[in-house]
Structures are given as C-alpha cells and as structure tokens.
Length: 261
Ligand SMILES: Nc1ncnc2c1ncn2[C@@H]1O[C@H](COP(=O)(O)OP(=O)(O)OP(=O)(O)O)[C@@H](O)[C@H]1O
Ligand SMILES: [Mg+2]
Image (cartoon, rainbow, N blue to C red; front, side, top):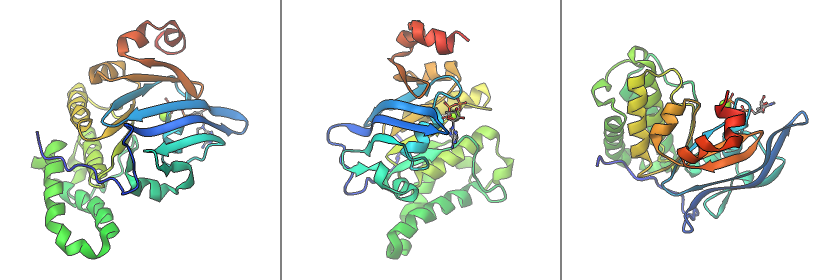
C-alpha cells in the first residue's frame, strides 16, 4: 500500500469506543421548516458511509451542522467521545480533524498542482508555528505521496486550469488530505464526472477508508453501489433506512420516497 500519512488526531480526540461521529436528537429549523428533524447518525472509525436521499432531505445541512456552519436548535453532536462539536467554532472543528469537500472545487487555477498542495500544507505549518523549517522536508514528502494517491503525480507542474473536472476534484481532495483529517465529508463527488473518473474516484475513496472515516453524499446510484458500503437514507431531515444496498433497494419506504422516482 502507498504511504498515506495517518491522520494526526488532536490529543483530546477519544475514539476508543470506535465511534468517530455521534449525532443524536439533532433538529434545526429554517423559518419554521424543520430541515433536520430528530436526526440520529453515527459513523465508526475507518468506515465509509454513503448518505442518499431526495433533494431537500437535509444531507448538506447535516454536513453544515457537523462542520459548525449551521447550529442546530436541539441535539448532541460529538467528534470522538470528548469533542463537543456544538461548542466549537468552524475553524476549530476543521483543525480538530474534520475535513469537508464541497461540490465546487476551490483550487487556484493559475497555479500548478504542486503549488496548490503547498498552499494547503501552509495551513498545517502555521499550526505548528516554529517548526516550519524542520517540517518542510516532511511536508514535501507528504505532498508527493498524496499526489501519488490521487493520481496526479505526473501532473505536479501542470497549471490547474488545464486539469479535467475530475482531476480538479481529486486535487481538492488531496489538498484536504494535507491537513490530516480523521473524518472526511464529501458532498456529491461524482457530479459532472465521466464514467472513468467515477471509477477512479471509487478506487480512491475505497483506499481512503483504510486510513480515514469517510461520509459521502451522492445521488448517482451506480456510484453508490460500487462503493459497496453501508448506506443511510435521509428523508425530511431524519433517517428513513440504513443498511446494505440490497436491503435499501428493496425497502418499500425507500422506493416510495426516493428510488421510485
Ligand atoms: N441556510 C439555510 N437557510 C434556509 N433554508 C435552508 C438552509 N440550508 C438548507 N435549507 C433548506 O433545508 C432543506 C434541506 O436542504 P439540504 O440542502 O440540506 O438538502 P439536501 O439533502 O442536501 O438536498 P440536495 O440533494 O438537493 O443537495 C431544504 O428545504 C433547504 O431549502
Ligand atoms: Mg445537498
């Protein structure tokens, strides 16, 4: 296996009971509309979890809550058993080891792949402050092994503007990995990708789950099927069903609200 630098959890992240993310009884309303309604959601260490559900089910809002962008009205939300996410600010949550990838890549088009990776490594370096100089060799090695992992080692000097949509998505994932997150939240990675890019992304996510916990929100059912992972179906802000693809596909409730359409 390639050398993927293992995540560096903060000292007070305790995952001894195996649960990396713990959400219980979480609700949030926007102008009286309950976007998240008594949601219970748990993610284990080294688990890849797919989240599916109709438009407006609350999938993105759930990620907004985990990352501190949206505050719920009620409920509990813990990272490991010691970090209360509802008491942390967005940047503290990001630094504690939760990385989020949005659908639209936020990369610097006029810079090379390597330079983009360096920029995200800077975030790490500034956290370590004084150790900047000593870390640089290590950071360079981490950039190189991450580029290997995301399949962009040969594009290191390529300006980002020349990458395909899929390659930009992988670069952004690589930039996220430079911050050594333990939990990755990825919203609709397959959107806009070619079939080849989707296949490559499935391989990448399958590799990432060996070293990280990953939550993937996705509408493309072939993509979800090929990830061969447990699935959570969200509907009207709460869990409608949870389980293997086969059980989900045969669940009458799921067929009615989602798969049937
Ligand atoms: N900041 C906000 N202010 C007001 N309403 C919001 C906000 N964020 C989400 N909503 C509403 O909450 C509901 C859930 O939206 P959300 O984006 O979480 O759905 P989703 O499951 O991600 O849907 P999609 O599959 O279309 O991305 C929607 O009705 C949406 O309009
Ligand atoms: Mg969404």
